Image 1 (cartoon, rainbow over the protein chains, first blue to last red):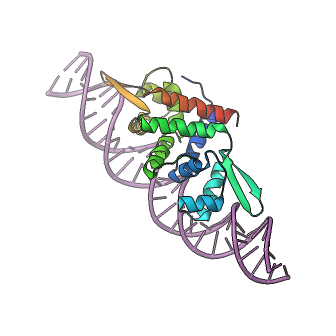
Image 2: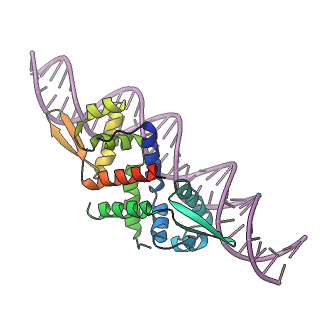
Image 3: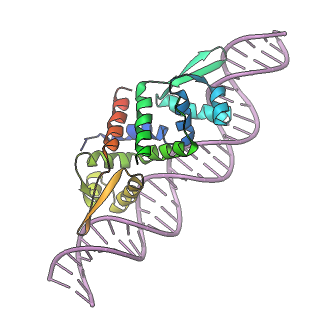
Length: 97
Length: 97
DNA sequence: ATAATATATGAATACTTGTTCATATATTCA
DNA sequence: TGAATATATGAACAAGTATTCATATATTAT
């Protein structure tokens, strides 16, 4: 048993919420290893740039991705290695589930 | 970049969805290390047994918890160690975020 | 300055989800 | 058998969410 404050429980739930959508999961899978522009992501995901941009905002707010602006493009990458680790650990669970 | 089928993306999102609610996070935090009955969980969480039971069903379906019936009680525990690892990895991210 | 391109944002809508309440099932005890 | 206890389930409602569409901001090129 791990003692959690209500605040930490909410923050943890918010973190996992950020990963709880297939579009965001696919965005993260594309960002593992390199950075990509919004348009590149939208093309590969077959989503509108607007939808991708909305999702990226959520990921940014949870510090899962970071943005780097270059000219008129914005390149997104994973914010830290926790993200890829959560991703691959989750994938493990799904595969041996 | 990790190549994901759409099915796997959906399954991963479903896994994280199962962890995306503060009540379920608190349930899991209570189950790390030991098993607990539905009533014990409900008491500690200050939730109705019905609400806890509904949540446990979702966790069971995602293979995050398992049920052991003993008499008229049902004792729940974490299904495998992936769960606790996802939990503590998430907690890490929240704390050093 | 104007046009074109890349991204972000607000509002609206359709869809999903967590809880409550009432009820059902299962088990034990008298 | 009948009463009591523990858990599960279905329906319903409120609250949250992902996408679309229209529009806004920012940057570059002419």
